[in-house]
Image 1 (spheres, rainbow, N blue to C red):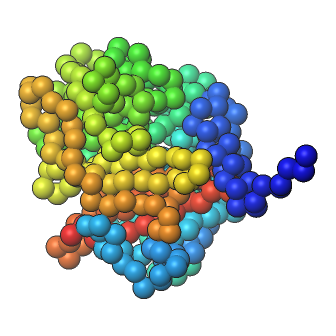
Image 2 (image 1 turned 180 degrees about the horizontal axis):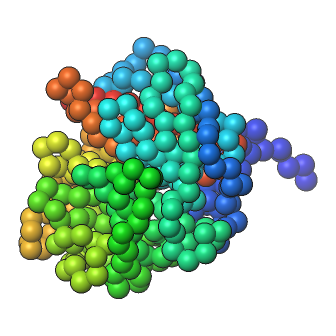
Amino acid sequence: MCVPRPLPALRMLVLLAALFFIGRFAPPGLLSPARSDGPAMILFKPLALDSRDPARTKLGALTFLGGWSLDSPNRGFGGISAIHIDEGAVVALTDAGALIRFSLPKGTSVRGSIDPLPVGIGAPVAKRDRDTESMALFDGRAWIGFEWRGAIRRYVTASGTGWRSDAHHAPAAMRAWPNNSGAEGVVRLKGGRFLVFSEGAMRKDGTSEVLEFDGDPAVAGTAARSLGYRAPPGYRLTDAAVLPDGRLLLLNRRFSLFEGVSAKLVVALPPRPGAAAIVAGDEVADFAAPVTVDNMEALSVTREAGRTIVWIASDDNFSPLQRTLLLKFALD
């Protein structure tokens, strides 16, 4: 019996699916990039929101302001899992435990740097010890979530000699989370509470687990309680940020063999202190073909001329078949 050959597009989708699931569930170290720290030229290629309709700017409650595909000759570039943007300066965290720093360009390239975090957990060459998936920056400090180790490490970012770690804690509740479904989002709420979102630690009520810390999660003894996050059906949280009015902005991703990668952006109220709660919100944007989308994992919020600006970046899993995207929107 003659079996028809698969369509090229289907073969490509199957290959992308394999790479996506390898990137998410492979043993640590299998896809670790070649170490290439130091200076890096970051290349920017402009993108439209919708390649079929280049004039399109609206996506739900978002207005598209610009988009780029990023690349670099430096082999350590890629794998962006968290991002922080402040006055045009970008700090991107990779899931290989490195910081990519650069400025938003006025042209097509800019000089930046790629540097390993000064302290990991355990051996610096093992990805399970440097699988960093989440980051929150506030007042000269950064809190970074280590996914496989179920830990939060705090860094002083304004030390003058680069980042240095000054606190580390592995809460018992986080250590119980599945190895590759740990701290996918970390946010600091107004008043000093923290939320740490798991990607895949599921509760009996069908929500994914969120830990609410009364204070600094990198300090042993900080009280924590379990909450739930109800993601859009079929989606899992990949990052979180706080809007200027105190609400939560939540990025969610889904992968389907036949539909590819999609993402949804949700706005939710933060939980009230001490009240039993499930975090759930309203969808404000749906990223699905033909909209420009990839493995969306990183989120940052800024202000420009009185507008709330939302930045979204993707994790290319250090794969040549995926892209590092950086998209800029105004939130209506």
